[in-house]
Amino acid sequence: MLERFRRDMPLLHWIEVFIEKEWQSYDPLTGNEGIPDDYLPWWKGKGSLVQLKGGDGLHATLSIDLNLEEAVRSAIERSRVRNPFLLDFSLFSLPIKTQAVYHVLLLVPVGAFLLVILRNVVGLKTFGTFMPVLIALAFRETELLWGLVLFSIIIALGLSIRLYLEHLKLLVVPRLASVLIIVVLLMAVLSVLTHKLGMERGLSVALFPMVIITMTIERMSILWEELGPVETLKQGIGSMIAASITYLVMSMKYIDHVIYVFPVLLLLLLAGTILLGRYTGYRLLELRRFKDLTLN
Image (cartoon, rainbow, N blue to C red; front, side, top):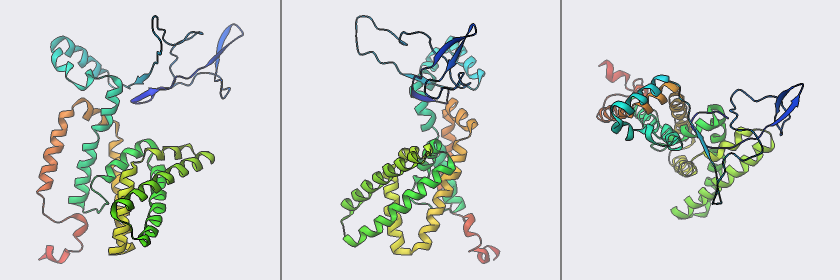
């Protein structure tokens, strides 16, 4: 199945039947006729995909990458001739399986830069420093709507149990470990329930960063006791807004392509982050509160 930047792709089998002087393909699991457009026939026959002589324990894995621009391929071929040294030390020299990892990792600085803007310029309050960025990465697999629903359910259930644990007067480390165990159990139960209900998107809840969720629940419970539920909900909603905006930007194919082909652009993000770190002016969400001061 052809998708963007996938590692360890499974090998699927089709059955071909000779009917009316032509071969017709059928899915042995569903019985559907024909091969979908996003599937690539790799080999035919009774034999295996690869064969090994003089050894045993052969295992074959496939990784795929989608090249949207022929110009990139042409530039790579020209680099092989003119300056092979630079190409040998570029991301394109890595195996496709590793390239798929860096397609994701290189988007993390983009999300971090967006978070700096949302917090230092806009004035949006969030839980944790990079929690919205990590949640946005998880949304890439769950999609935005499903991700928001699943994440909110886990946080709500975990927070209710965490507030109950407060009566036990536990120490910090045992309390965090208890919340982590509860989060893992909630994720497992939620995956089973959504699978039984036929909602396969619910299985992707396992991609959520459980440690970040645990620390978020701990932070929310402390804030709940210190400042009350209103301020806690404000920061929770702010975190979801930040994660949603970060997801929408990181999901843009153009940004993904440009950052991967020209990773040196991350230096511009670094410069912008340093400049924003020196910003001491008003934040957008604070303008109404300090309106009288700005007029004077």
